[in-house]
Image (cartoon, rainbow, N blue to C red; front, side, top):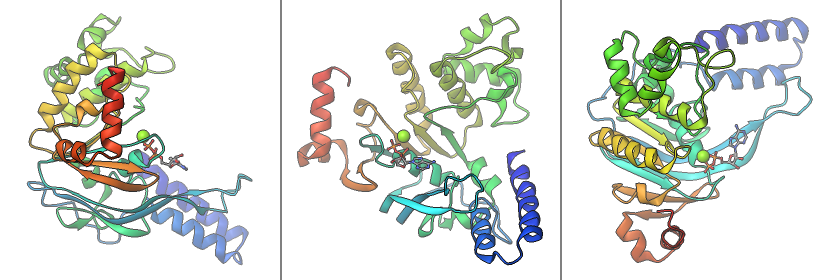
Length: 308
Ligand code: ADP
Ligand code: MG
């Protein structure tokens, strides 16, 4: 729906632009640039190699584009650099964790891997294929993301869970909901799985939305997983239980975990510590503790606060 809507809408914009100001070539090129952010490349092929989907970031630089603020959409400029030379690899089937202060650029990594935006410098590859060269639908099919702030559709709970896997049976939907510890809540709603969510339906808390998003991802069961502080909105009992679920589904998948609680990353194959768009430390939990740097002090802080 969204993928169809944007290009058509964009053609309308282009057409109006051509009609209204044939001379404003600069504006045209910027609009085309903006379009390129979300378009399939000519002749894009489906993402392959999903039996061994190694993920690589190679010298990735990124800045969000900012408008000129007057609302005419003409002035898109690269803003402040948000990622500055990020390089790392998630070997197929392994887990890489990212930690660091708010604003460091962690969620941006997740958005770029899902290709919400294109990068201008560097490369992101999956099984050796630049993600800009494959179809967006195949890319998004291969990746399950539990974002920091889950957005649900104004549709039934069942639709929201089954979204990642059209044709899923009611039993499969319920099994995923049970694993995400949201089944009892749904079953207690007036129309159960047929209950509408959103504005005119059932209003869900942040934690409940997060659990629906987790159920959706469990059901989708993709080869690549991204958890962006996936349990941050949950109370600690639910968090512990779901964390165990997430860890077990991540077992043999290529996984990027963005964590607010360091206790959830100790088993990661590699931990990246980010600050201000850079990776400032990397290693296993033990290696980073031995380094006695930023990670070690974050760890000490969380231990003493009882948060870990
Ligand atoms: P983290 O997840 O580590 O807290 P983010 O990746 O969300 O950090 O953000 C990194 C930086 O990019 C922050 O300074 C943030 O304000 C900025 N940023 C995030 N999203 C956008 C956006 N859509 N437009 C402009 N700036 C953004
Ligand atoms: Mg974030």
